[in-house]
Length: 121
Picture 1 (cartoon, rainbow, N blue to C red):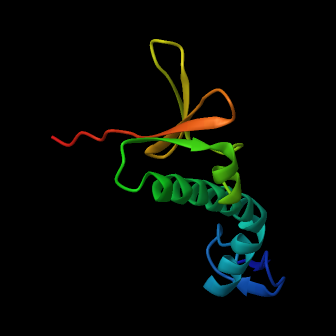
Picture 2 (picture 1 turned 45 degrees about the horizontal axis):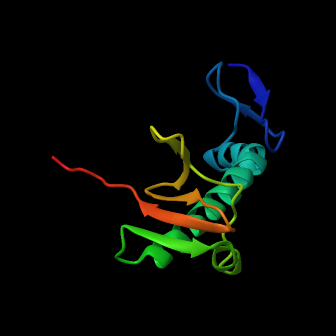
């Protein structure tokens, strides 16, 4: 068997021809280091989306729809740049959704908050 250098610690080891690491610890450390920037980026966006969802859920409580001023959403830390989907109805209104909670921009800096109806068979 040929000896190779571990991609993480550079130590020599023997093993299968396609083996790249001397141990599971080195393999995990290598992949964690290489994926950390991408993982942090996705984690930060998911945190923003979850916060947006919590804000909408808190404001709607048990209501199906609610009119809310921009100021209130802004005070609660809502970030209008992040949403999970867009829905356009037949009238041409554009709703922005954070998972099952959404909002429709209205005139005079206010929003109509909505809850998506989820049908279960």
